Image (cartoon, rainbow, N blue to C red):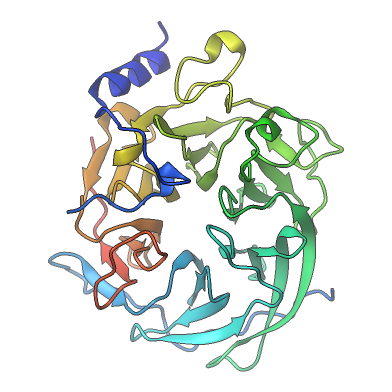
Length: 375
């Protein structure tokens, strides 16, 4: 038995037994109780909000968000996407939010709408959203003065991606190689995940203009890895290794180490046990009631995973995944995204107003936390 298989087996043994959910997407179910090139980005006039130098606990950074999905940072500029409204908000130093603009042509239904945001190395903004013709990735110009940027012209660099009211994927981000990566869900068509000619159930890798990236497994296509059900988070460790979170159906949610050309098994296998079929087993897996992993970040080679149904943040050391810890279990409700905070801690984004949570009077929120102790 390999070391990785032993780790997965240990996690499987310790995992809580999950009951089959009745939600149309049980892994994203209610929480248990407890065109022209973009011009240069305007420079922000105030630093992003940060907690005191010696925080005594979680610090609320912003409140009153409406079904937020993604946080993107570029220098002092912090933007937040709202799935259903299509708004992109700027987070100011005092924690207030200001509308930068609304993504045009948006179709918001079910899990679809305005999803991931990302900046490239030049500070240009990209957005993943659902339109009438399918999911798309756009590069959107930022215009206006530094104190109040606005959305300018949008150039669609990729469109026609599979879409549905479930399993839209939606995470985008630039890797250490400068290429743009995007997760595309199976959009309710599980068989597409094993079809190398289809874009559903895949992680894609492309140039900033939407062309197949040099070095892809098949240089003629955008496909980087296959056999995914619904990836909503990915990030890279210090040595350039890519990791991704994945929603299972009703048995196992996964953390995977992503390799070019690899097949992660869906729908032939869910969780571990696919190595004999040529599939890559997960690094870790959890039952769906305790997970539903969405956004993730890697800070100091610790993988931070925001969980929706599980209502907790997981911290997984890259060097020793078996020593993962859980924090803030049930404390803030559903967690959609996590990013490194400007002061070295982490910001977590709650997601209680998306129709599946139990929102409080200040939801949804951005909350600053200390990095969990692992090891």
